[in-house]
Image (cartoon, rainbow, N blue to C red; front, side, top):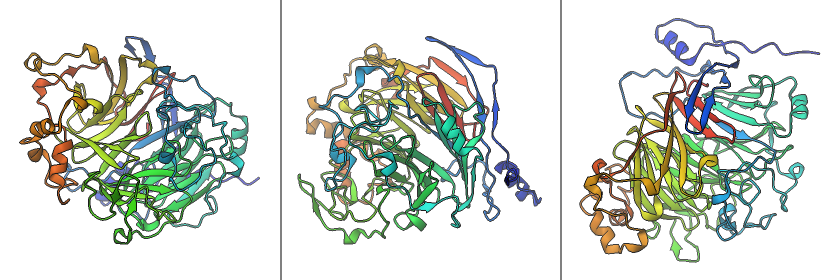
Length: 580
């Protein structure tokens, strides 16, 4: 039996760039994944956490044809398009114990069918209650088994059209498949956990239930494009089929089915949008549709099975959405979003399904709420936007003290939104009351990821975590009823959105909003946008009038900046920019 030789070994990208800058010729060598079991622990109120394993993913070097990126000013703080970092997705086919049930959706608040698929398309399930985990619960907080509803059989699902292992595409440099790939899939336990990780220009598929987690099932190396984000579809998952999408620094997107090793390229050569994809997620409950955030401030909805076509906003016809006319040109003054193509457009034969322009600066992250209807979007212009996805309506704009916002997540019950950003702070917002609940101080550098621990949340108490550029993991507990504002602000009360009149809202924002809207924000060029912004933008309250929460734990979790965080029922998982 012919066995492929081991892959060549390369130095780290930093060492390679330094050698090239110094004029030294260096051989390109790639390292293998390394698994260690360090002895380390930290104590929190509920008990002791023990660091079980430290898996270092092989950091691929630049492709030989890729020019090294050398920063001419190492002190520059201007954000650059991300080309490095490690993001991870977890997947299990087994039905795992769900988080606490207090926030589970009822049929009255369950997923609306029109958010999952285009209204003019039929669904095989015909089930408006089906969520992305197939159990009628929120996709963000449950990883249950595949749906038993009238969904397509896994073997009959449409797969991508191209074979990745035999591809001659210049976009893909190399595909390395474990020589025991078929046997490993057949022998693995049914309740095992898969992990997918993108790191620079590589993508790895790992089996965390394997005795040797360092052995990847599949490793893909791309030529010049860097994979910046990815997402797994929990609706279509099954032992015989997995739908996964990846977003790249070139703006291109790959739909990959890892079991059959087939793939399709979307937005090929940037035919729809040429800017990098900073975040990508499946639309909750959808089998085909996903949303990608591009770094030009656009949100684009794609269909994995549709062909791409060059998009010209001028050719889009006006379409009726049942509540009024939405023009594809300019700004819809009812929605305050520049809708280049509506999700309700009649022209849905090709991608894109929809395009929204939110800002002139890059979108860093977005998250769907527990009811799968509302969208929280954070961007480099220092704003968080709350959007009604179905109505394409911008509900609120919240602002950071300074700098951009980099990460966002919803509480399990959908009442609160947590953001982190370049002001080294974590902010807790209540969209229904249009208010800032508290600021969390504990990081000493930019916050890169936030996530709630649904297993430690109940009707009144919440636990969430954060990681940042300071290499620290912080855990936070908050109870809104126990929060106290500083004495100077004790006479002020938070009013609900229903108790405020339009005139009061405008009176509160005048004199503060206009000066806070940046000259290069996404609305600066929109006709009539200033008045619209003032009516929905929430004023920034002074720090002296905002409650402050200290962390219940702050721990240096790695020697390198952290960039990803997730809670499971058994552990806390993090990743760093260098692949650990």
